[in-house]
Length: 306
Image: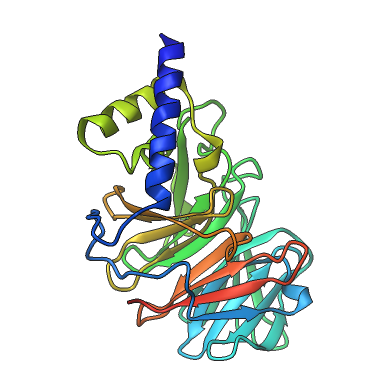
């Protein structure tokens, strides 16, 4: 019986892979009202200096500037939105694996992969005020994505690794997004959102085929390597309020509703997206995605909504 499941899953995975790569403009999805981005044709590509080869998180600082971090030094970079040039650098601590950044008013929040959060006040001044918050997340969770949610006045933390806080496999087959309450200054003990990997696998199927595919994937425990989704960045779209989650391992951009339903999934062209790590949106809907450089230079890609 398991063998039959594997054969069917292989066929459906091939089918879904073809659908990902051959989506037509006439195809109707749940996110048809969402802004459309031509992910294979960025409006601008900015090559970044060598010191930003390990760029990770991105955030909008103000109308003209993007804030960024890289995963080796406690340093915030301010980057011009019109030219991609680094305007200034601001240190706030020692070395570490810094993965995400977001802004709450003029205060920067920075995420470490072990789940620690750093509130950096007055970071453009010579002596910023830095407060560390240790959360129940650990290196096993591998926290990578960080976004401010004004709707709940909280920080959303997307985990690349283990989805649960405690031992065991409570959320096996899912990736977790946790919420850090900025009033209580504490992390939720259960995920605010769960990304069902089997739904990602089955997304391009429809009706009864999709339902069977989800059940078959869960029963067999199979998730194809080609579509294995590990969140590396998260942002909230200013117009439709959807969560946008990127994965550098799967080269996918996922859109999720506030109810936790996957609205759409887009393939990120590998030629443009070497290692997508950070994502943010300007108020007009313009999307920015950062790429680690690998053996070359890092980059930021800008996409205006169509």
